[in-house]
Length: 275
Image: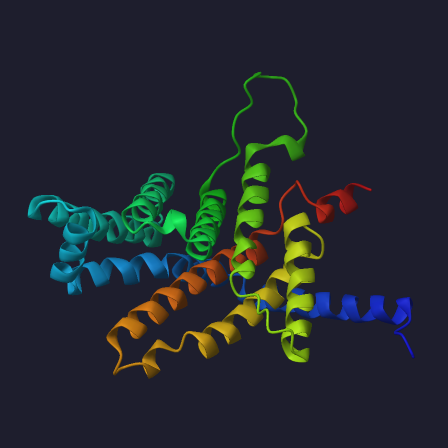
């Protein structure tokens, strides 16, 4: 059995990284905007759904939690304005930290209201959304001041770098929700390659290249698996697929931020530069 020589494998990786750098160079002006739009897409879709399905959402909360009409209506209003308003702020790049904090609250609020905390798959996806929002905050966050004014600190200890690390770790959780356990040849290969890439993103090794591959992988998987436009005759199925589709788009947006921002100081890539 012939194995690829280490030298040739390294050459392939170098070529792939060169192509990734070319892609970044040509998209550096609009990639952060695309990442931002993808990231908040699930909140925009859910906010619009609150408006279009006002009575259904209100009645669901009333029956699910056995509450009065007023509280059910308050739930819809909070979700409507609590998602669309921060999304507008983020697109306009106004008070982004405050907008992200509101969306953090909405994620927690919905997890309790819809009882997502008892569903591991949906809970993991919510964690991935949190990771994406953390990376959005990193883009707009200035370096935090040290508590000891005038005392120099290591670059890797900056809070911004730890936020990037936490964001990366939470983002890759998304992959765990789409792992296929049928153990066919194709799915096994997909799981192995995808698993290697999420590990690389998590530890910050060949980060941009690995994140780009995951963007491509999730995009193809999302279009194939969550084609909600094909379920016009099944409203419940369409809503479920639409929810999955836009949540995956948000995670893709977070991964695009990893591509645009890099892994940060707490990563293997950063350590390699120091070595």
